[in-house]
Length: 353
Image (cartoon, rainbow, N blue to C red):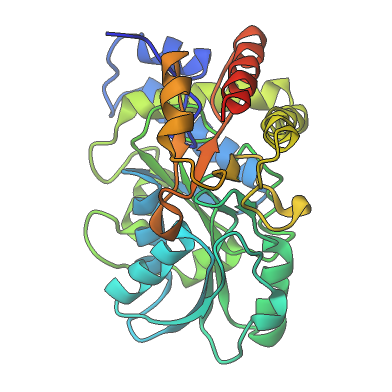
């Protein structure tokens, strides 16, 4: 089978620390080493996310963390604001509706930035998307959260940080964001399979028992004691803990600057040949992925197939942008020489359009 490298906005190429952890012997999830890995991951996720609160590790995708946060923080019937400007903000509305909440939706063009001026009153919370992976837009999370709290002092602000964690600055407590959902297969450069629910002080105070498997209140009690309520994907915990420990030791700020530079290189190449970025504002581009509209008359395969022939897998569009855009990402781990080859191959493919 041909080996291909992932330039997709998840899953991503694994960090060497993740590979080393996965190659180790099988851990028992009730052992002391497993307790230490779980504690390390929980502590470092909370610190990097910028909260004095706690992180709950779930076996599942980032969506599992989103579902757990909605059901654990809001009672059925609660009115929550959901600004939709892409596939993953749309998912918040679907999750809220499935949990019996009343989502108050504000619709935006996909690729548009959400405006704090549109925050309504009379809501119990807001479900926001920080990095909208389907469009490549980094939404103004701090400004949106501030507006929510100013107009609704008791409201809880919950963010999808699945593709902003370890890719963009994240300061939950300073920004008045009460909780966030994260996944292991994005900026954490680990395999898919972990959902991380980050709970700030106000979210911890509001947490309620809900459901069975994704019951954050039950899981938090178990994890505070060094255990999990159910069998976790302990190999993935080991991988994610190892990656995060290394990134923290090397310096998170330098890591974020590197990811921003890597993504900007793709935008420079695309714009050099006249491609239009999907994010409508240059300052609102997420470091998680570069997203471009296809030239008139071009199909997504005109980009994806020649890139795959060169050993790179990229992503297409979703929802109403399917067949209209493509996305390319340096979110995962790539050596500098590999990245330079990726940029050169991308430039060559773009010149053929």
